[in-house]
Amino acid sequence: MPTNAPTPSALVRDLQAALGERHVLWAPEDLLVYEYDASIDRARPDVAVFPGDAEETAAVVRIANLHDVPVVPRGSGTGFAGGAIAVRGGVLIVTTRMNRILQVDAENRLAVVEPGVINLALQQAVAPHGLLYAPDPSSQRICSLGGNIANNSGGPHTLAHGSTVNHVLGVEVVLPDGRITWLGGRQLDAPGVDLRGLFVGSEGTLGIATKICLRLMRQQEAVQTMLAIFDSVEAASAAVSAVIRRGVVPVALEMLDQEIIRIVEPQIHAGYPLDAGAVLLIEVEGLRESVAIEAEAAIDACREQGAREVRTAESAPERERLWEGRKAGIGAVGAASPAFYLLDGVVPRTKLPQTMQAVQEASARYGLRCANIFHAGDGNLHPTVMFDPDDPDAVRRVLELGGEIMRLCVQAGGSLTGEHGIGLEKRSYMEWIFSPEDLDAMGRVRAAFGGEERFNPCKVLPSGHGCGTGHATEIRHHLATPGVYV
Image (cartoon, rainbow, N blue to C red; front, side, top):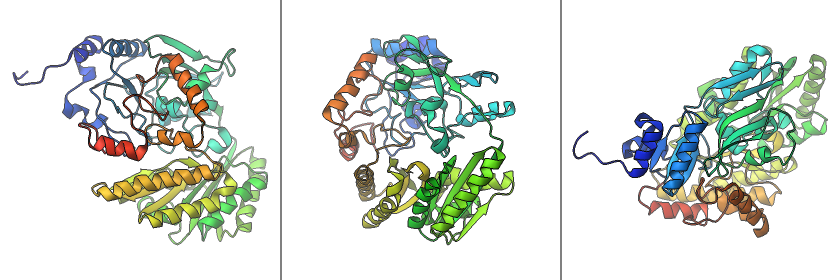
């Protein structure tokens, strides 16, 4: 080592002794790629470590405690809410080495995996058994199951199958004091307090998952995928409720507006008409006879609301092509714009038409392009705002627009997140929907697990030592803080 090379700190030396030097990164140039996730916030950890199992993860937590530094869990870094950002530095625990599928029990329809397993890898592993793992976020090619657990991720098929929490049987967890325990088990309904359900969606504030027991489902006999084409977002939004009123609960009901269609179609060639105001991607599954009946009811509902055409996929490749346009939509935005801010809010289905109109009006008022691609069936909106990150005024306008869109969702009787989590991004908005007593109760749960502000600090709850008081305020604070910036 050159004589002028920096000397590792005592924290780094202890971590290297526990994991080996190759699994501990501490040089600034090595940490560059770990200072951000898929959100627009950035902050550099002091050190990033890559444990190989629960015991090594527990050792890292104990060392961090010894040195009194924060711990931040991280999976693939695909989160959109800043949940894996090391706002106060400390140790970033990256779970990508823990990527084994430990068991597929086809007879009992369950799988045991490590947190670094990619969502799609599990889907591919269980498919030969005639099974599937239902939660399928649009980022399933790259997102990890541990991250899905942390954010209670959803996906296009949440409408019928539920989100991640509905498919988790048990979780092996490293607690904030370094102990290892199981929450839940291998049964659908373990006795006692449902700490498993409490842990799923806790965004890394209560502990780190090191093994996960997941429920698998049998593949359905028949699937039918349709593309309904509308002249306006309002008509497509009205059709969402019309489909449900017919007594049909599709396994997926997705919307893309004209802005996103004109970005996606030239890149993906999914077959979406460039002149459409919006399209609905509708999928029903089940027994062959029931699928035919429900598909016809969904088609009738769309036509009733003014669909100019409803196309039905006639083959598996055609179905996959329709879905490719939806799954690759955000990536297409990334290729078309220097930066984008992907939002996540929820409104009642019946409020979709007026909410979508309000989102479009707000985007125009701020002078920003906004594309919409989202889970319309459960009212989970994903406005995607495109901007130039080198324009400070554009960053300001993007953040203010994001806050206004979140406020629109709350005023419509909705929520701040459907699947991306609260993270750093929306922690200051929690007071819009929760009382001080509610937030105090959440803080007491965090304290009971031992995390308080050492485990993923400045996330989820709106207050904390050394944390800002609001998203836009936090960004301005970080801009003036060495090593922490947008």
